[in-house]
Image (cartoon, rainbow, N blue to C red; front, side):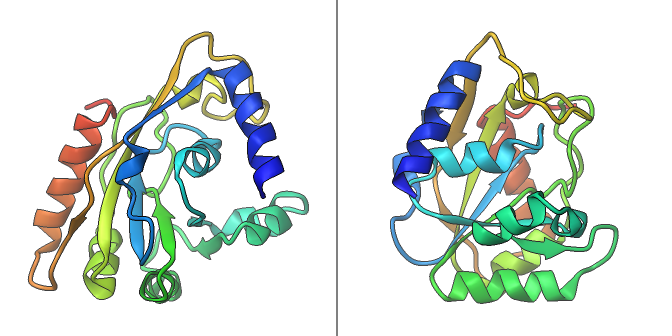
Length: 197
């Protein structure tokens, strides 16, 4: 919704400010898999604000059980994933959306970073990329945890620029190994601003 987007931009300008670079690289049509590092609970909002098209985010299943949060994230197209296991339903849903020409957002670490450093990437994203056969684009986030720190639920001013940097899209074939795919994603995220541990 344009009005809601504008209001959210204003809010994040006051909290951030928020600076985005390279969003023009996001394919304007067709399925695209968006992968980002994960520093804060506000990351999906920040990625969506800077992405030129709607994104369906994979989100932990517990969020959908919350009275206020659940209905809101469903309204914006999010879908659940059960963490700590190979959730075949979530993988299948991701591939279906991508093949239908939608943008799907996933945080491949599978959880928030407690210390701000890029954690281990989960192999499920490689399977999704190979199943769907769509372009993959990485998005590097820096300092979103200054707006909403780990374990906090109320946003606060970051007192510095919060950066979102988009990389170049790339398509992978079914012959691509999970190791090769995850190495590319990790390299991209570090290049785009994520912090190495």
